Amino acid sequence: METTKNNQNAEKYFNNGGRKYDLQDFLGAIADYTRALELNPELAEAYNNRGLAKASLEDFVGAIDDYTRAIELEPRFSEAYNNRGFSKANLQDYTGAITDFSKAIEINPDFTKAYVNLGAAKGRIQDYSGLIAEFTKVIEINPKDSTAYYNRGLTKFHLDDYNGAVTDFSKAIELDHKFTSAYFNRGVVKLILDQNNSGLLDLYKAKYYGDSSAAEVIKRYCH
View: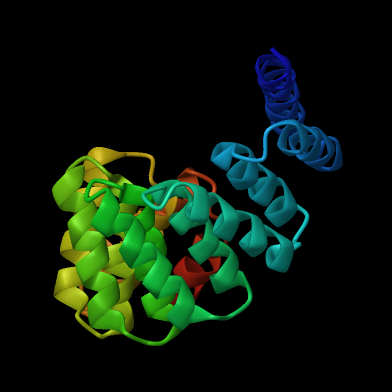
């Protein structure tokens, strides 16, 4: 009976922690998740969620400890691997982050956020071909992910694959016709390719949708 009561009370604290987290009361959330774990130390999700609250307060070391405990309790907890990888990346442990994101994907091959995070970590170590590969996997999972096309286009832009960048920015715009940054970057790439009229048209679009930096580029090319 005592165990059942503890578990019920732990669930109440766990739910309270979730509500406080949603309200960005991260200290309050940590306190409630801690109380839940005192009552039921086997709540892997409470460790994971307390880690999220700690990470929100930039306590990435403490967050990693919580994610690690969650993984010990549930070895196939893909979200905990992804979250631990994110905290490691914030501590510039990109190799460790890549390992965790890769494990999250191994457990859940459709985990889009983990692919994005893996790509970002690879970008940090200048593995740009790896970065493109991860965004491509995101697109394979969700062909309507305009941000994945945009980010892949940015990477191709960085690698001087201008035609490839234009293709990806165009797809992002096709999916989201108000994608301001995609218009801006496609415009810049077209100017590099001497497609001035089309490039300026994109920059005017970006300006129309609120990109103030587009006006400066337009001014340089029109005077």
